[in-house]
Image (tube, rainbow, N blue to C red; front, top):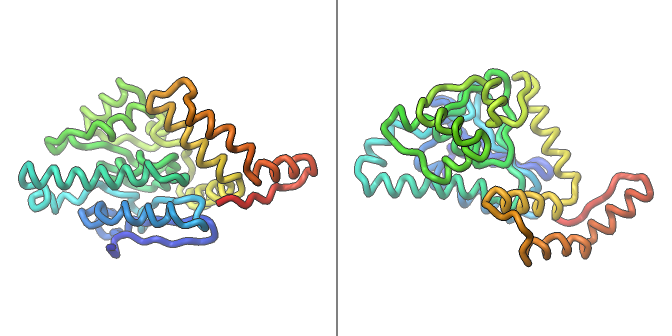
Length: 260
């Protein structure tokens, strides 16, 4: 565990904060190491329905991986492989969470920060945000998994432009490219993000999580139902929440879903 990551829960919404405001929330190796267990804990918590990932302070979501560690943590091929495995494990943990994840982005979302944001299900940003993926500025190569996330959102030619240039992209352009899903004024970002998270908490959670599962299957190449996807869909009819949803609709009242 590390003090550089904070977890707070209010109701059914958990907030995971990158807590190094003094360094623009640069992500150090300890944070990458701690993220999988933290996310796994939230994933197993029956009270948590949505996870918001954000940066501390008012200047950055995250400015990238902590470059001051590179000589020590990536000073040899062996050390670099170990470091890269920890980065990949952290991103996979966020991407693989069964619960919806929202990146709340203000200020800089650069390098490793962009990697974590892209691993989230959706990204909400303010109009002052800046996005960049910067391996080309450091003589590095972006991982295949991380590259796929960029390609899935922006398309292959734009992904090449983003990766080859390493340029910072202003918030409006990042939104146009599909890297950000919503763009709001800075003073509205927190309210907008948590209002949306609250909406998700009121929905049938089996539907929410299996909807995420279905989208992930499509993104990973599945285009025809198999036994598992058919069973996922059909099993929803056996849930109490399905019965409650129908009853609430017929009674013209808000549903009270129980599954968590």
